[in-house]
Amino acid sequence: MLSTLPLTAGVTLLIVLLMFGTAFAVGKGRHRYGIEAPAVSGHPAFERLYRVQMNTLEWAVMTLPCLWICAAYVNDAVAAGLGGVWLAGRVGYAVAYAREPALRAKGFTVGALAFGALGLAAGGGVLWNLLGY
Image (spheres, rainbow, N blue to C red):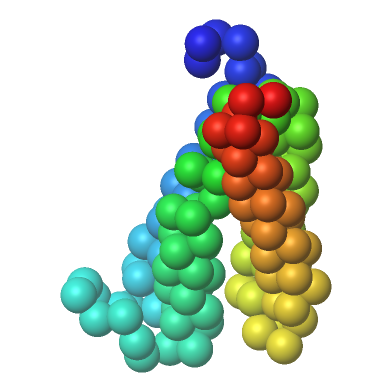
């Protein structure tokens, strides 16, 4: 069955790449700003990178199951499209937050709305299936 969902698989890999990128940025920030593990504070620029990583992980944990449930019960293209919007929002959030925290709201909002749409679509698809349609 998974082989019939290549678009969702591709978006999932891009989300994993985003998570890797945020982790890499934190590691690089540790070196640049002299923040030794396990510390997570000390320089405002590092703290922003760390918050981007943590917030992205928090949202990815909720988004990925909705993405795959939507793909399985609704449609690969719908899931991948909404997942791509979520990804774009998260990238926008990450870039804006790292530069200027006050600018992060637009990317955050795009990602949150895409997550909501994925959750509603996934839930609707499951319910539709349970009702036998």
